[in-house]
Length: 353
Image (cartoon, rainbow, N blue to C red; front, side):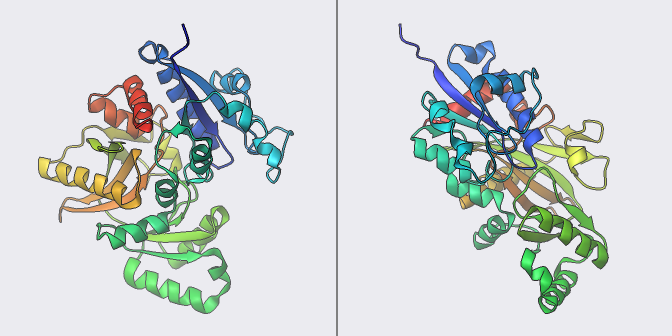
């Protein structure tokens, strides 16, 4: 009898600074898809993109996930060579559904989603528009503003603006007038808190902008909100549903890269201790935020909540949230009654709608 199993192309790694996080996410997804619950329906073909952008074959890629080999930078290609994709036509031939476990530029910003779309195959997660808007914090917040969704005040600038002293003075004046200190300085197109600093003075603000500008051409400065950090998972395309609400607690001054991926520096409370009205409001806003930027399939929407005023602020939509051992998205759905192996199966089913 012919094989009726779907072949899943699990793509991970990539050229971004979130390369290592992507490998961790891919390991979790690979194990879930290989679980007996899913092995009767799916065959997983891991595809590793190394730090030079070269697409490795399935055998080598699987060895990375099984920790038989360590990621290395191949000399087969370089960043500007079309040979980076020389393996792609062969790898894509037998794929039924793409499952990106990528983070950062070229992974969740719509670039690879466009490539998947050109293959004519289904893929997990948002399309090119939702991915690009979800990745770029400035574009995302502009959309939120047009939809009158609640969010923190922000100011943005371009890397080249640093050379214009007059313009920078007006930007600093606006920040001190509307944002105040402390504030957060972020690259517009990165996740996992990479390149983010908390500025408590003008000097720290200048230093923070310089750090962020090393990662991205565009930089955003956001008002610091003293409140609880809450997260909500979204699943579905034609019909979206929300998970329970989770809360993040951390030992550091703010939710840094180290605290995100170190279980000793942060912990999660699922479900968060919230009254039903606030939970419902957050879930409603989570879906509204996803629809505003055309995100679908899966997303994790992050919020700030000030109990004294009962004010809820949308922080951002993550269109490809992490799937590591300490990642909130799979934990939120497990607390909502959907275990990891069922969650990844649901994501593939959603992709094929």
